[in-house]
Amino acid sequence: MRSSNPVFSRRGFSRDNGYAGFNAQQPQAGGPAVGTNPYAQDAANPYATNPYAQDTQLGAPQQTRGDVMTIDDVVSRTAMTLGTVVVTAALAWFLLPVDEANLGKSYGIAIGAALVAFVLAMVQSFKRKASPALILAYAAFEGVFLGVISATVSTYISPGVVAQAVLGTMAVFAGVLIAYKMRWIRVTRRFYGFVIAAAIGFILLMAVNAIFSLFDGAGDGLGFRSGGLGILFGVIGIILGACFLALDFKQVEDGVTYGAPREESWLAAFGLTLTLVWIYLEMLRLLSILQGDD
Image (cartoon, rainbow, N blue to C red; front, side):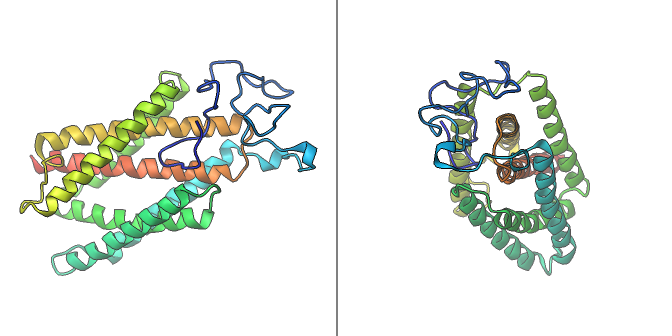
C-alpha cells in the first residue's frame, strides 16, 4: 500500500504483510530481518517488496552509506524548507501592508501566492522523485500567503494571536513527537486509512462551505468556520494535523531504518512542512474565533 504522493499517503506500507510496526524485530547488523522489514529484498525479485533495493544482478551500484537518508538529512532539509516559509512570511508581513488603503492589494497578492503554492505542491505530490527547487518554491509562495494572513489577523483581531498560534503549533509538534517516541501512538494500516478518510471528508466539507460562502452575504457559508461549529471544526482540523504528523514521523523512521535514498529526505521535509502549515492555519483560525467572541 505504497504511493508516490506524499500529501495523502506515506511510504512504509508493505503490499502483503500490512503495516510493519517498529515494535517487531529490528534490523540486524547484517541486514534487515525478512518478514519484519517492509523493504526486505526478495531474492527472486529484488523489487517485489523493497522500493529501495538495488539490483546487483543487473550490475547496478549498491547504495553506499552516504547515499541513504539520515535523521540529520531530514532535520537540515526541513529547517531549510520551514526557514524559507518563515523568511518569506516575515518579508510579506512588512512589505505588504494590510491597512485600509492597501488591504485589497495585499490580499490579492496573498491569494495569488496561495494558488501558486497549491499548484507547486500538487506537482511535487505526484512526482516520483523530490525536486528541491520545487519544494523551496512552494515554501516561498506559501510564506507570502501566511505572512499577509497573519498580519491581517494580528491587525484586526488580536496582536498576540499569531504568537499564540505559533506556540500552539510547536506544542502540537512536540506533543505528537513525544507520544510517537513513547509508542503511545501506533501508526497502523487502520490508523492510516482512518486519517486519510477523515482528512478527505474534512477538506470536501470545507470546500462546500467555501462555495456556499460565495453566495452568502455574511460570508459564513454553512457556518462551519464561525461560532460553535467553527470552534468544533477548528479542533478537528488540529487533531487531523496531529495525526498527519504521526504519519510523517513514521515515514521518516521507515526511511532511516531501512535505508531509503538520501533524496527521500526532501519528501519528508515537504510532508512535515505541509502538515505544520495545516496545523498553524487551523490554530490561527481557531484562536481568531475565540478572540473574536471575547
